[in-house]
Length: 210
Image (cartoon, rainbow, N blue to C red; front, side, top):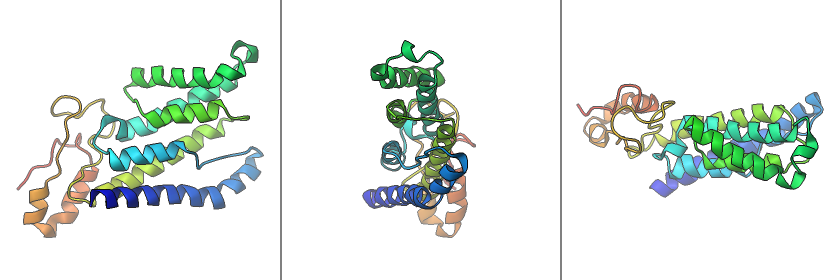
């Protein structure tokens, strides 16, 4: 069951990005006269985390959105530095990834796909500020699909928290369990529980069985 939910969630999110890349992004590229790419390998890494490892800190919305944004921003700063000779082309990706790691840890938003984003954009022939917008958009889209889809399973509770560094109840890494018994005993209230899970574990603490 878990594998099926992970497969379907990943398929839906990456398919949406692929459709947008096919039908929307080319038009935006023509409007802004810059090559834009929405569908990149980074989002495969993000999808694996939010659907297969949904309870871990790196899969929570703050880490996904901020972690990927930091990666794109680090690559952009390295690429558009006013002193091109200061950072050789062969080292730009290394500087972008290392800076991403540093900033992610400082922000409490470590997300491996953000490093992949920094690596890809750091090696790109051309990068513009539009890449930041696409990065934020793709991150939010995947998080939205994960929130709506993961919580359809009674065994999943996503997000564990929306923005805090740690869940409000218990030490970092504590897994907030979904109220399985509540759903089984009162299936007519499934929608209520589903909407409460979407609020995240930091909304009012773990859901109570009643």
